Length: 353
Image 1 (cartoon, rainbow, N blue to C red):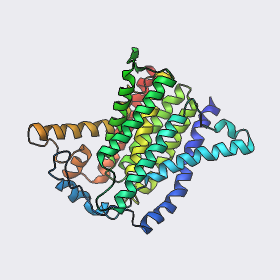
Image 2: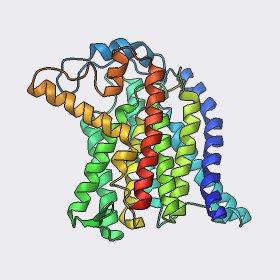
Image 3: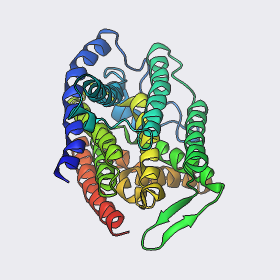
Image 4: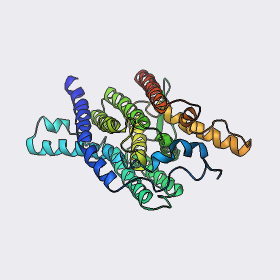
């Protein structure tokens, strides 16, 4: 048990160290090439075309002076961690072979999702900082996320024989072929929650806690390679957070948020029926800030469309707190606390089942 725990904790620390080493080099390049948005703020509101003057007032200047693409630190540190451990295992054998978490049965799919999300997100970020018209349209990004979710859902259904989701204290609930559609829905919902990347330090801390929570669930289910993968992502996120604490040196942006959300979807489903657990059912709890982000955005759009009035001054709700006078650091740290509590609660449910 002690050695198995070390197989999870060592990748966590290694990813953090690698991330700390990558970040200064990346920062230098991002500032050298002025890799920030050419035009700050948002021209359109959430589906209504009325604009977002309050958001622009709060964030417009920072958006045209702080680089994007900080998410490179996260996925690069995770991939380097996996490759370094694998290379040491090939060159020197044990004990490095035992620490290799690149496993066909557990981590090929989340690694694939992480890489695809990172590449597409990076394309969007590059276009964002090189064109005044911005990056990829929302429609194209949603199409990519949906396609990736459909592929991963099909893989679970056709290759791994998974067609159900675990319900706490009840057992598996059979979805049949609708499992693939459900996988796509969960992936899109997580991606929608990725817009929480809007305040210095907020998204990095939240995602780090979420991935560490799932590392604990996977470890408890004896999915050690999956736990090591989730832990390495968390360690890389803590390295990112070191440089993202106010004032942020860079933003997570699309290459980070897309990579993390699609990879999180795969990790959650991997800790579900496949691991004889309830990883998907506890996802709204463990990822509570993402859940609240999606819900408050939906409520705001619905209210404006139907009742012609806003519920929040700005949605998602973390920007509402800013608008009513909360300092950004207070919003961030309280969200961290909430995520820790939610993560522990979700972990407890997952362990009890």
